[in-house]
Image (cartoon, rainbow, N blue to C red):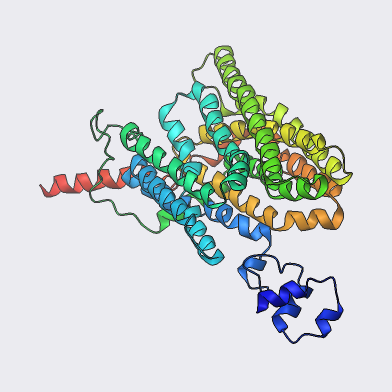
Length: 466
């Protein structure tokens, strides 16, 4: 009956509204969202009425929390174990998202999924396990380009899939990719965590066993946040987080709105334009960043006559990115505000993402090289800063742009990221080595080191008792 009433009351004849008793029909006529399935209620608490920024940022927020659980576990049970368990749960949750029948269930499973991607924090530590000092720029650059391009590739891939196969296939294909990754990890990933003297054979892929070692609550949160006391970690992480947020995350939550409203594009066109532009920009930026930074380190090693020059030499490669990011932000903001040709916002995104790739490679390698033993904790702190900043701006950035205009919002973003957040890093270029010497090495921060120390103490006690 309701469907019949809605058909009669299509909104074109206002007198119809006054002549009917069907309350549902009246609501349908007065509600511009009545065509949506399922139809949302008038309650703001209804998840269907949540703003898009809330629907899309819960995973971003929880991505920043998950590593605080997994990094300490990786330090005790090994990198391989954590990679395997988190990849399996990522596969299971992605598969589950494709079968849900309510928005609440989708959000819940996505929240669980957001806790388990561990590679964002554990990846840099694994790179440090595998590569020599002079190779880390290129290796970490490859890692960051994959990390940065993930959200961009999703648009390139998700748009056509959603249009031709349906949104559920996005999750099913993602689950299949996770499963393939899991198989590769099971058969192809050895344990990369190495302690001297080695506690297990060269051919053993099983994680080391530490009898007598107890994983404590303090291992999960405190170590990473203690690294905020060290400027060589704090300032690069804040600079990288702000620039990543403005150049990678903010376009991700606005491009669909902009291109749909301004240019009338559909989901397929938006996904191809955004995903293609950002992915190509990331890859090109990495080709420039990784090789240049490693060449700088190699050249300074020869000039100084040392095997490992001070980490500050890596800052010589940051200037290209530091200049391109604000340029890209301003181009994006002004061309969006003044309704330029669609190539304007895309050009701004390309320039900005090229720059962030350079900045990410420099900041990651500088901070990890400054505190190599605490590499896992440094990665945790970087990840927390990036995800928490991105989540916050995703919530409020669109409202800010609508309130003051895209041009003024992006002027502010450029000033915050490229002046306020960048300035302390100039100080590190000049005084970074002196600051580290004055502060000394971090104490009670490296969970891995504490675990090894506890293990050795346990062995000594066993020897005395024997």
